[in-house]
Length: 165
Image (cartoon, rainbow, N blue to C red; front, side):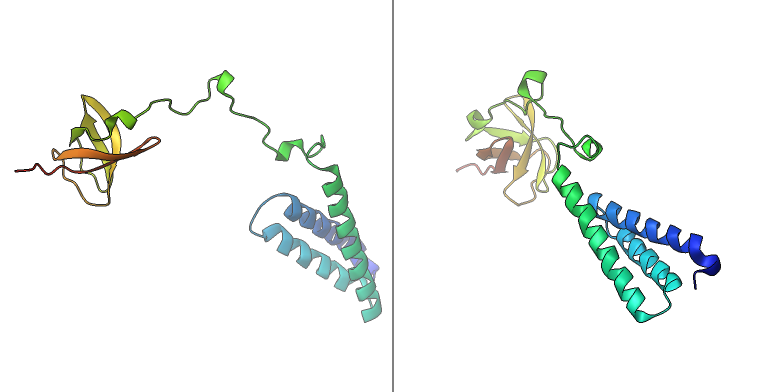
């Protein structure tokens, strides 16, 4: 059955193996893996003349694939061949990467005015400063008086201020 199909068969087999390796290395949704399996099966069907030969080729293909995966795993993250897959940058404080250092805990108990609707988040003005805030789940209309009930890092939690009479 080799005949005219030899070149196509070898091409499909190698392409299938390459696609399976790509599927193992690059995150995705399975398209290279499925295509690789189909290519390998088609190449095996084209090259074999009986069931024994087909099973022998399938087993050897699985063995080759497992060997390739083991070699890639052993190379690990330090391999110069796999460096392009790994993000090795750090955002260090010394280089200017910082989260906000503002401390909003002094706002607890202070009142302000909603500069936008809070549904549940929006902008409030507290002591003349515009800050992002979040209501306790309720809708608060613009220009409503609010009070800061809680601060969690950068998150300022407010509720509608109801004056005592």
